Length: 189
Image (cartoon, rainbow, N blue to C red):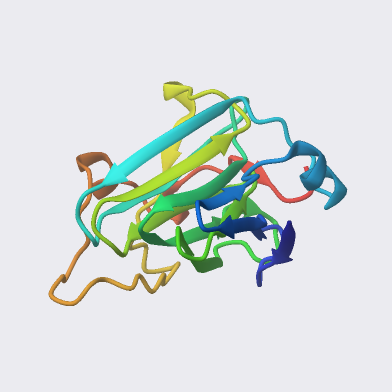
């Protein structure tokens, strides 16, 4: 398993090993000890799976606040996404900054998004399926989000040709700007 930090070093790309032969392949997509050996000590308690039929579907930017904040380990089992993490930790040197990476079934990579970051993804292929592990159970009262198109963030979403805006849920279409949100996370706390 390879672990690589992105420009915001708390965000990691994880590349599990994949062994193939004439039958297909085998891969250990999650191994708690291997992650711990890489300095990642998390206890995942829930797995989620989404399917987005249309390229250009955007899910996010989501997070849960304390006491039910979640770390996420995200992988794509079919298709591809442009995955984004935004630092929303007050006092962080990278507060309000974002990083993005293409996560795909073909690349067999994953992204680790820790507590204190908003997370979202834009589908790049039809019928894209995303699975992700979280370290806390879903808690509707702690479920929050920020606007996918917050001008202060300036996220460059790679919309498919012919789309002026992504396909959104009603919820994602009415999220607040980051500057309108309370300070739910503090850097170093």
